[in-house]
Image (cartoon, rainbow, N blue to C red; front, side, top):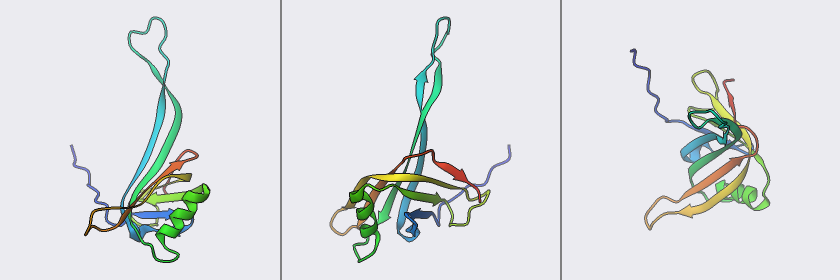
Amino acid sequence: MTRTASFVIKNPYMKVHNVDISEMVREVEVNREYAEVDDTSSGDGNEHNAQGIGSGSFVATLRQSFATANLDDLLEQIFSTGIDVEVVVAPSGSTLSDTNPGWSALCSLRKYTPFSGKIGDLVEVKAEFKAQEEIARTLT
């Protein structure tokens, strides 16, 4: 079997509410799943499940900034007003391609931890954006 190329995340792209926050990204993940719906019927020798309703989210750990008009201002506005915003992520920069797909969806900021850490640690923020629609995969 031919060994496939490995990929190391070095330049992830993340845009929230039309603001590029890529320079703040420490970790990001795209989660997509479908509910399992029991579709087992008489005579089946095993459980059978159908694909149910989908759900998804974007979870990010970011370097926090409390400077005016920076990350905390953006996320606090989104969280406190409850507005839905577009979130776009890609593993390697903003130019999408076959080798750098992007994922996007209209999302609500469901979990926002403005900061966490011990004394002497880098201040980080954790944010979970819950998709309000199917997360789309885009190559261009």
